[in-house]
Length: 553
Image 1 (cartoon, rainbow, N blue to C red):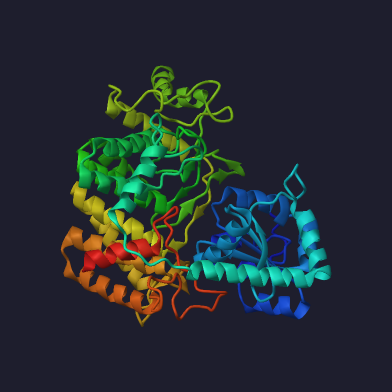
Image 2 (cartoon, rainbow, N blue to C red):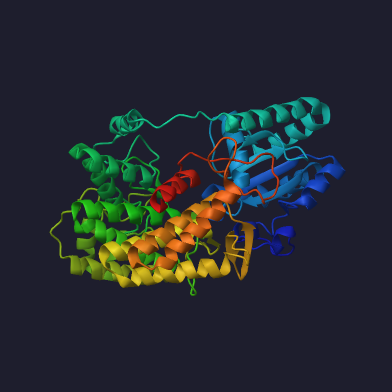
């Protein structure tokens, strides 16, 4: 982030998380999550102000610029609260607990996540992004902090009662497990839901914003395999083609952005996440297997080109994400003026490119242009070799721009997904270089994110591993190992998958109610042990573990 005051630093300067380091020079007296902060809150009788986000989060940057770099906000927090910063990608267990609370009391969630806690970590109020000052009906952070301060001083008993009730209701929600067999009608009802919500014009489901959620498309592929209903396969193909045609796909440097802000996949939220690209590569590969349409193989290969070029640690392993913002402006790195294009490619070829990729003088995004094929379509008769040369020239030019921030921490779970994708890519496309990249990265994970007892850890950065691995780390690494076995027939991978799967059961299995907890029995004691069965942006650890169990069996 640019324009920060570097004169003094807070405790976050000693952390490895790129997100925490982004806040290390705020005037806010930030603490990392830990005993020092809790003891201070107890000793000084102050509530905790907990802020959870991640380094490539646009609205996290906005709230930082507006509030956390502001001396007035810093003073209120210093005088009346203990302020804690958490990277949700390093501590998904904490994010899970407090996001569940936020969604329960507000009906929505997102990042930055803002939560007020008692000194013993029980939540009593939560929200997401708050502007510094009141904006219409939206309460500002300064107003909110002063209100919470007043309630803490005058109506403490009510707040404590609320926090106890909230904690109990979340625990009851987790404990309220309905045991029943999954009957065929569940699959049929789910398929019916997707049919009902399918966008026949642009693909995808529902309205804006639209997320790729590739595991939903993989579910539909399996429904098609079961019943050969052409409508179901058409839904998958329409969605994959529309996403590729849209601006959510980076036609110059490859890879998908996190989601589209509109219904036609044109304007993305420009950040790129490792997990999205891994899961999408797998989905395009599986659809290629079903249809033999070379477009799907091409998209998977382009995703791998992006990952191996821009998101790979030299020794193996993959970085987490790239930011939406550069130079403080969302999307600046990715957009073009028509003049730029014609200057780079020449008048004649520049005009051809602009016509093909929807580049105009007035623009399709805040006066600039996001290259896309939405109107032109994918079956154009243009010379693909020439188009590739144009893209390479534009990529070379774009590389000279100021790049978005890259979050270079290596997460075990997300790496498991990309290793699985590359192994599958090598097998399906008969490309040994993808299998080699997958093997290099699994060896990196096993060397750097596993201790002498075999215990997996969640994060590696600058030579340091940290945080005992969560369920997702185990489930996704077992998946990666089974895909590597399928691609190589090296039996060592199956042996290792069985070993890590066994440790996962030992650490995470719920003996009373079944299923797997999110954090291990040897992990830090939190308000409660979360258990995640919901498939959100990624399939849950329980989903992936279930498939692993079936495959290993």
